[in-house]
Length: 333
Image 1 (cartoon, helix red, strand yellow):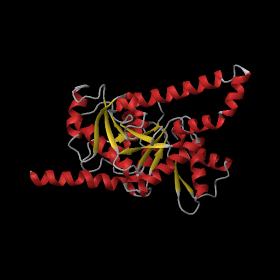
Image 2 (image 1 turned 90 degrees about the horizontal axis):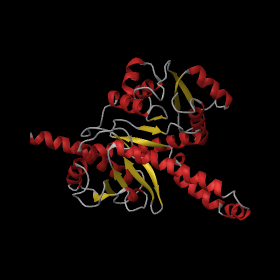
Image 3 (image 1 turned 90 degrees about the vertical axis):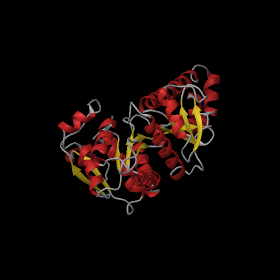
Image 4 (image 1 turned 30 degrees about the vertical axis):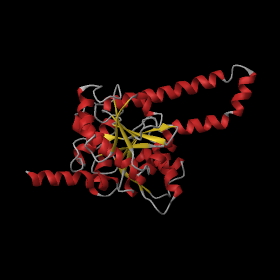
Protein backbone atom coordinates (compact mmCIF):
# COMPACT_ATOMS: atom_id res chain seq x y z
CA UNK A 1 0.00 0.00 0.00
CA UNK A 2 3.04 2.29 0.12
CA UNK A 3 4.66 4.37 -2.59
CA UNK A 4 3.56 7.23 -4.81
CA UNK A 5 1.57 4.99 -7.16
CA UNK A 6 0.18 2.40 -4.77
CA UNK A 7 -1.56 0.07 -4.94
CA UNK A 8 -1.70 0.03 -8.76
CA UNK A 9 2.09 0.02 -9.38
CA UNK A 10 2.75 -2.71 -6.82
CA UNK A 11 -0.05 -4.98 -8.08
CA UNK A 12 1.04 -4.39 -11.66
CA UNK A 13 4.65 -5.27 -10.81
CA UNK A 14 3.63 -8.48 -9.08
CA UNK A 15 1.38 -9.41 -12.02
CA UNK A 16 4.29 -8.88 -14.42
CA UNK A 17 6.53 -11.13 -12.30
CA UNK A 18 3.83 -13.78 -11.92
CA UNK A 19 3.26 -13.96 -15.67
CA UNK A 20 6.97 -14.53 -16.33
CA UNK A 21 7.15 -17.79 -14.38
CA UNK A 22 3.61 -18.73 -13.36
CA UNK A 23 4.56 -22.12 -11.90
CA UNK A 24 7.80 -21.16 -10.18
CA UNK A 25 6.76 -18.47 -7.73
CA UNK A 26 3.93 -17.50 -5.44
CA UNK A 27 3.16 -13.95 -4.38
CA UNK A 28 1.46 -12.42 -1.37
CA UNK A 29 0.03 -8.92 -1.62
CA UNK A 30 -0.39 -7.29 1.78
CA UNK A 31 -2.84 -4.44 2.22
CA UNK A 32 -6.47 -3.44 1.82
CA UNK A 33 -8.10 -6.52 0.28
CA UNK A 34 -10.87 -4.69 -1.57
CA UNK A 35 -8.44 -2.26 -3.20
CA UNK A 36 -6.07 -5.06 -4.17
CA UNK A 37 -8.83 -7.23 -5.67
CA UNK A 38 -10.06 -4.28 -7.70
CA UNK A 39 -6.58 -3.78 -9.17
CA UNK A 40 -6.17 -7.51 -9.87
CA UNK A 41 -9.51 -7.54 -11.69
CA UNK A 42 -8.54 -4.56 -13.86
CA UNK A 43 -5.24 -6.22 -14.75
CA UNK A 44 -6.99 -9.58 -15.38
CA UNK A 45 -4.56 -11.11 -12.90
CA UNK A 46 -7.04 -12.84 -10.62
CA UNK A 47 -5.96 -16.32 -11.83
CA UNK A 48 -2.26 -15.80 -11.27
CA UNK A 49 -0.49 -17.38 -8.22
CA UNK A 50 -1.20 -14.32 -6.07
CA UNK A 51 -2.81 -14.40 -2.63
CA UNK A 52 -3.87 -11.52 -0.41
CA UNK A 53 -3.25 -10.89 3.28
CA UNK A 54 -5.55 -8.14 4.49
CA UNK A 55 -4.07 -5.25 6.47
CA UNK A 56 -6.49 -2.61 7.68
CA UNK A 57 -3.94 0.21 8.05
CA UNK A 58 -1.38 1.97 5.87
CA UNK A 59 1.72 3.87 6.96
CA UNK A 60 1.91 6.95 4.76
CA UNK A 61 5.18 8.21 3.29
CA UNK A 62 5.27 11.34 5.50
CA UNK A 63 4.68 9.57 8.84
CA UNK A 64 7.37 9.13 11.49
CA UNK A 65 8.40 5.45 11.24
CA UNK A 66 8.58 4.26 14.85
CA UNK A 67 5.55 6.27 15.95
CA UNK A 68 3.51 5.00 13.00
CA UNK A 69 4.47 1.37 13.70
CA UNK A 70 3.30 1.73 17.31
CA UNK A 71 0.01 3.37 16.38
CA UNK A 72 -0.77 1.21 13.34
CA UNK A 73 -0.14 -2.36 14.43
CA UNK A 74 -2.14 -3.75 11.52
CA UNK A 75 -0.24 -1.83 8.84
CA UNK A 76 0.72 -3.50 5.58
CA UNK A 77 4.42 -3.04 6.37
CA UNK A 78 4.06 -4.72 9.78
CA UNK A 79 2.10 -7.64 8.36
CA UNK A 80 4.59 -8.04 5.51
CA UNK A 81 7.56 -8.32 7.88
CA UNK A 82 5.56 -10.70 10.11
CA UNK A 83 5.11 -13.03 7.12
CA UNK A 84 8.87 -13.02 6.61
CA UNK A 85 9.49 -13.72 10.30
CA UNK A 86 7.08 -16.67 10.36
CA UNK A 87 8.58 -18.23 7.24
CA UNK A 88 5.40 -17.80 5.20
CA UNK A 89 7.42 -15.61 2.83
CA UNK A 90 11.02 -15.96 1.65
CA UNK A 91 11.51 -12.27 0.84
CA UNK A 92 9.76 -8.94 1.33
CA UNK A 93 9.60 -6.12 -1.23
CA UNK A 94 8.23 -2.66 -0.41
CA UNK A 95 8.02 0.75 -2.07
CA UNK A 96 6.54 2.24 1.09
CA UNK A 97 7.93 4.38 3.90
CA UNK A 98 11.63 3.43 3.98
CA UNK A 99 12.10 4.33 7.62
CA UNK A 100 9.11 2.19 8.61
CA UNK A 101 10.43 -0.79 6.63
CA UNK A 102 13.85 -0.46 8.28
CA UNK A 103 12.35 -0.02 11.76
CA UNK A 104 9.92 -2.94 11.37
CA UNK A 105 12.73 -5.16 10.10
CA UNK A 106 14.95 -4.23 13.05
CA UNK A 107 12.21 -4.72 15.65
CA UNK A 108 10.85 -7.98 14.25
CA UNK A 109 13.67 -9.70 12.37
CA UNK A 110 16.66 -8.30 14.25
CA UNK A 111 20.15 -8.10 12.78
CA UNK A 112 22.40 -10.98 11.81
CA UNK A 113 24.97 -12.22 14.33
CA UNK A 114 27.84 -9.73 14.56
CA UNK A 115 25.98 -6.88 12.82
CA UNK A 116 25.08 -3.77 14.83
CA UNK A 117 23.08 -1.90 12.19
CA UNK A 118 21.71 -2.73 8.75
CA UNK A 119 22.53 -0.73 5.63
CA UNK A 120 20.66 0.00 2.40
CA UNK A 121 22.85 -1.08 -0.53
CA UNK A 122 22.04 1.18 -3.50
CA UNK A 123 23.21 0.33 -7.01
CA UNK A 124 24.75 3.29 -8.87
CA UNK A 125 25.77 3.33 -12.57
CA UNK A 126 29.34 3.66 -13.80
CA UNK A 127 30.67 3.52 -17.39
CA UNK A 128 33.41 0.94 -16.75
CA UNK A 129 32.08 -2.02 -14.76
CA UNK A 130 28.41 -1.01 -14.99
CA UNK A 131 27.46 -0.97 -11.30
CA UNK A 132 28.82 0.51 -8.09
CA UNK A 133 27.31 -0.47 -4.73
CA UNK A 134 26.84 2.44 -2.31
CA UNK A 135 25.94 1.87 1.33
CA UNK A 136 24.45 3.11 3.50
CA UNK A 137 21.79 4.68 1.29
CA UNK A 138 19.75 6.07 4.17
CA UNK A 139 19.03 3.57 6.94
CA UNK A 140 21.34 5.25 9.48
CA UNK A 141 21.75 9.02 9.54
CA UNK A 142 24.37 8.76 12.27
CA UNK A 143 27.02 6.04 12.34
CA UNK A 144 30.02 4.89 14.32
CA UNK A 145 33.28 3.59 12.80
CA UNK A 146 32.29 0.01 13.59
CA UNK A 147 29.12 0.48 11.52
CA UNK A 148 31.03 1.71 8.46
CA UNK A 149 33.46 -1.15 8.88
CA UNK A 150 30.58 -3.64 8.81
CA UNK A 151 29.03 -1.86 5.81
CA UNK A 152 32.28 -2.30 3.90
CA UNK A 153 32.45 -6.04 4.54
CA UNK A 154 28.74 -6.60 3.77
CA UNK A 155 29.01 -4.51 0.60
CA UNK A 156 32.00 -6.53 -0.54
CA UNK A 157 30.10 -9.78 0.04
CA UNK A 158 27.04 -8.54 -1.88
CA UNK A 159 29.14 -7.28 -4.81
CA UNK A 160 30.98 -10.58 -5.04
CA UNK A 161 28.12 -13.02 -4.50
CA UNK A 162 25.21 -11.30 -6.27
CA UNK A 163 26.86 -9.00 -8.81
CA UNK A 164 29.66 -11.43 -9.62
CA UNK A 165 32.48 -8.91 -9.13
CA UNK A 166 35.79 -10.64 -8.44
CA UNK A 167 37.66 -9.18 -5.45
CA UNK A 168 35.49 -6.03 -5.21
CA UNK A 169 37.34 -2.77 -4.59
CA UNK A 170 35.98 -1.10 -1.45
CA UNK A 171 36.42 2.64 -0.95
CA UNK A 172 35.57 4.94 1.97
CA UNK A 173 33.84 8.15 0.86
CA UNK A 174 35.74 11.14 2.25
CA UNK A 175 36.97 14.62 1.32
CA UNK A 176 40.43 13.54 0.20
CA UNK A 177 42.38 10.43 -0.70
CA UNK A 178 44.92 10.71 2.10
CA UNK A 179 44.25 8.66 5.23
CA UNK A 180 44.56 11.79 7.37
CA UNK A 181 41.75 13.57 5.46
CA UNK A 182 38.12 13.65 6.55
CA UNK A 183 36.29 13.79 9.86
CA UNK A 184 36.91 11.58 12.91
CA UNK A 185 34.30 9.09 11.66
CA UNK A 186 36.07 8.46 8.36
CA UNK A 187 39.58 8.47 9.84
CA UNK A 188 38.66 5.89 12.48
CA UNK A 189 36.70 3.83 9.96
CA UNK A 190 39.72 3.80 7.66
CA UNK A 191 41.83 2.22 10.40
CA UNK A 192 39.25 -0.54 10.87
CA UNK A 193 38.63 -1.24 7.19
CA UNK A 194 42.29 -1.66 6.31
CA UNK A 195 42.46 -4.57 8.77
CA UNK A 196 39.62 -6.44 7.09
CA UNK A 197 40.25 -9.32 4.64
CA UNK A 198 38.68 -7.31 1.80
CA UNK A 199 40.12 -5.31 -1.10
CA UNK A 200 40.03 -1.95 0.69
CA UNK A 201 41.58 0.72 -1.57
CA UNK A 202 41.37 3.59 0.94
CA UNK A 203 39.60 6.92 0.77
CA UNK A 204 37.72 7.97 -2.35
CA UNK A 205 36.04 11.23 -3.33
CA UNK A 206 32.67 12.05 -4.86
CA UNK A 207 33.77 11.68 -8.48
CA UNK A 208 34.97 8.13 -7.80
CA UNK A 209 31.40 7.00 -7.16
CA UNK A 210 30.66 7.15 -10.88
CA UNK A 211 33.98 6.66 -12.70
CA UNK A 212 34.39 2.91 -12.20
CA UNK A 213 37.50 3.04 -10.02
CA UNK A 214 35.65 1.48 -7.08
CA UNK A 215 33.03 -1.28 -6.75
CA UNK A 216 31.74 -0.59 -3.22
CA UNK A 217 31.36 2.89 -1.69
CA UNK A 218 31.08 3.08 2.10
CA UNK A 219 29.55 6.06 3.91
CA UNK A 220 27.03 6.95 6.61
CA UNK A 221 23.34 6.97 5.70
CA UNK A 222 23.01 10.76 5.75
CA UNK A 223 25.83 11.23 3.22
CA UNK A 224 24.71 8.27 1.13
CA UNK A 225 21.14 9.50 0.84
CA UNK A 226 22.33 12.98 -0.18
CA UNK A 227 24.54 11.41 -2.88
CA UNK A 228 21.62 9.27 -4.08
CA UNK A 229 19.03 12.06 -4.24
CA UNK A 230 21.50 14.53 -5.80
CA UNK A 231 22.40 11.96 -8.46
CA UNK A 232 18.74 11.36 -9.28
CA UNK A 233 18.09 15.09 -9.56
CA UNK A 234 21.14 15.62 -11.76
CA UNK A 235 20.10 12.80 -14.10
CA UNK A 236 16.60 14.32 -14.42
CA UNK A 237 18.05 17.79 -15.07
CA UNK A 238 20.38 16.53 -17.80
CA UNK A 239 17.51 14.62 -19.40
CA UNK A 240 15.29 17.72 -19.36
CA UNK A 241 17.99 19.94 -20.87
CA UNK A 242 18.78 17.42 -23.62
CA UNK A 243 15.09 17.13 -24.58
CA UNK A 244 14.59 20.90 -24.58
CA UNK A 245 17.72 21.76 -26.54
CA UNK A 246 17.30 18.96 -29.07
CA UNK A 247 14.01 20.50 -30.23
CA UNK A 248 15.16 24.09 -30.74
CA UNK A 249 16.33 23.80 -34.37
CA UNK A 250 15.81 21.40 -37.28
CA UNK A 251 19.47 20.23 -37.33
CA UNK A 252 19.22 19.41 -33.63
CA UNK A 253 15.99 17.47 -34.19
CA UNK A 254 17.70 15.44 -36.94
CA UNK A 255 20.79 14.91 -34.77
CA UNK A 256 18.67 13.82 -31.81
CA UNK A 257 16.85 11.30 -34.01
CA UNK A 258 20.19 9.80 -35.06
CA UNK A 259 21.35 9.66 -31.44
CA UNK A 260 18.11 8.17 -30.10
CA UNK A 261 19.60 4.66 -29.58
CA UNK A 262 22.45 6.20 -27.55
CA UNK A 263 19.97 8.22 -25.48
CA UNK A 264 17.92 5.08 -24.79
CA UNK A 265 21.04 3.24 -23.67
CA UNK A 266 21.99 6.14 -21.39
CA UNK A 267 18.51 6.24 -19.86
CA UNK A 268 18.63 2.51 -19.22
CA UNK A 269 22.00 2.79 -17.49
CA UNK A 270 20.98 5.57 -15.08
CA UNK A 271 17.32 4.64 -14.55
CA UNK A 272 16.68 3.27 -11.06
CA UNK A 273 13.79 1.31 -12.54
CA UNK A 274 16.27 -1.14 -14.06
CA UNK A 275 17.62 -2.20 -10.66
CA UNK A 276 14.22 -2.19 -8.98
CA UNK A 277 15.22 -2.07 -5.36
CA UNK A 278 18.01 -1.97 -2.81
CA UNK A 279 18.65 -4.79 -0.32
CA UNK A 280 18.66 -4.03 3.39
CA UNK A 281 21.93 -5.77 4.29
CA UNK A 282 22.51 -7.08 7.81
CA UNK A 283 18.89 -7.96 8.61
CA UNK A 284 17.91 -11.55 9.43
CA UNK A 285 15.75 -11.82 6.35
CA UNK A 286 15.59 -10.80 2.69
CA UNK A 287 14.16 -7.26 2.55
CA UNK A 288 14.22 -5.17 -0.64
CA UNK A 289 13.40 -1.46 -0.51
CA UNK A 290 12.08 0.10 -3.71
CA UNK A 291 11.95 3.78 -4.60
CA UNK A 292 8.80 5.56 -3.49
CA UNK A 293 8.10 6.54 -7.09
CA UNK A 294 8.45 2.98 -8.40
CA UNK A 295 6.47 1.97 -11.46
CA UNK A 296 5.14 -1.52 -12.07
CA UNK A 297 8.32 -2.34 -13.98
CA UNK A 298 10.46 -1.16 -11.06
CA UNK A 299 8.49 -3.34 -8.64
CA UNK A 300 8.96 -6.34 -10.92
CA UNK A 301 12.70 -5.69 -10.97
CA UNK A 302 12.63 -5.30 -7.20
CA UNK A 303 11.17 -8.81 -7.04
CA UNK A 304 14.03 -10.02 -9.22
CA UNK A 305 16.49 -8.40 -6.82
CA UNK A 306 14.81 -10.26 -3.95
CA UNK A 307 15.13 -13.55 -5.84
CA UNK A 308 18.84 -12.98 -6.47
CA UNK A 309 19.36 -12.15 -2.81
CA UNK A 310 17.77 -15.43 -1.70
CA UNK A 311 19.30 -17.58 -4.44
CA UNK A 312 22.83 -16.37 -3.66
CA UNK A 313 22.43 -16.94 0.09
CA UNK A 314 23.66 -13.46 0.93
CA UNK A 315 22.74 -13.66 4.61
CA UNK A 316 24.53 -16.98 5.00
CA UNK A 317 27.70 -15.44 3.58
CA UNK A 318 27.43 -12.45 5.91
CA UNK A 319 26.77 -14.68 8.92
CA UNK A 320 29.72 -16.87 8.00
CA UNK A 321 31.95 -13.79 8.00
CA UNK A 322 30.68 -12.09 11.15
CA UNK A 323 29.29 -15.05 13.07
CA UNK A 324 32.74 -16.56 13.35
CA UNK A 325 34.02 -13.35 14.89
CA UNK A 326 31.30 -13.38 17.52
CA UNK A 327 32.17 -16.96 18.47
CA UNK A 328 35.88 -16.08 18.62
CA UNK A 329 35.20 -13.07 20.84
CA UNK A 330 33.09 -15.17 23.22
CA UNK A 331 35.82 -17.80 23.42
CA UNK A 332 38.39 -15.11 24.14
CA UNK A 333 36.32 -13.81 27.01
